[in-house]
Length: 250
Image (cartoon, rainbow, N blue to C red; front, side, top):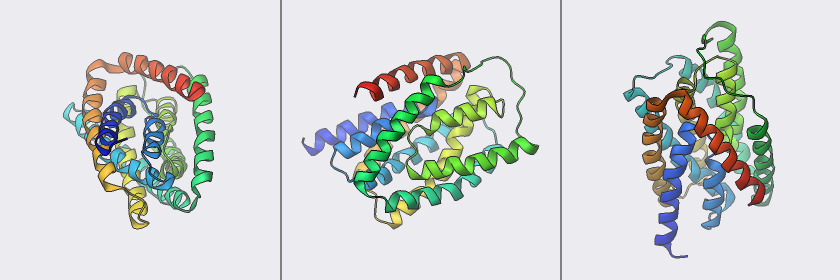
């Protein structure tokens, strides 16, 4: 496959994944196999994928902010906690062998299938948020462990974050997504630094992916706010079905 075709594929995938990750999650389950298919070693594909995630979450954050949606400082507390886990997870990913990484990715895909098939029903009714006190502290502990997984591979973590923030912190889905993108931006930055220091980033591919991710995330975030919880719920259901079919049959 010619370089131009590969780069076009990466760009298109980036746009799609930017929308998917901003409104729901699971986009890295699409980009990681594509990057490996393009010839990148698994660890380099993993590091390169973070370039796209970083710009995607930055653009999504700007999109939510442009619509007046923010959960500051709650999102910063969770993000800082996740940093420590992400650095640990990224270092594990750096040291793991390519064959082992592929096997771990296959197992994760199976786990994500179970999560998206059996996750609890998302409610769209009015919720009383719980963002302080013990709920904040428990959230910070949880996001430390989320950060470990996020630093290691990140694939499918969006679904887990949505479930946790919605059911534990009682946030509506628009504010859940606004929180999610800030937290992921913060811990992805720390993980990306680890990959960069270990020369595990293909910048040309990464920047093309990032351009697509950023475009998709901007439109995804604004669409999320405009359409509200009902749209996000429907999108989640559609993505769950699509990801289940993809992971089960392909």
